[in-house]
Length: 196
Image: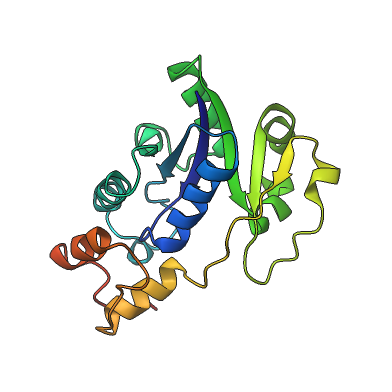
């Protein structure tokens, strides 16, 4: 099993996330893509993130409605916080010793990976698929890191911030998120106040 790990707060999950994940399934050797939902980081203001368990359930319901090869992973909910990518990978390898894990990350993340915990272990021990991000000059990270592959996934002008702003303003989000996500946000009264 070759699993792509898509880390994020998914606050909320949106069509851009899903487009990248499905592109990775269709255009790479990945068997599944797991959305690794990150719980609340205590170093960030609480109002910036919706409730951990609500976000987890929102992602679970969303991916279940899209593609059976998309999964949700809650491993970081059981780990010490804040959690670091290298620790999460090691935990997943212990839990699934026969699986191969590939990191999925945006161009902005690979540009700052030298600041990550044990970044050399990450770049030396794991395959990394990098997708473009708006306004980020990707350069050629595969020349710096032998296990990095740049994947020409689509760039959609959607962000979680944009979705939250639309919800707070009472605007339609049908073009930004799947219907199941929009219904989940509405039924749980999420993101209804503007964040400062």
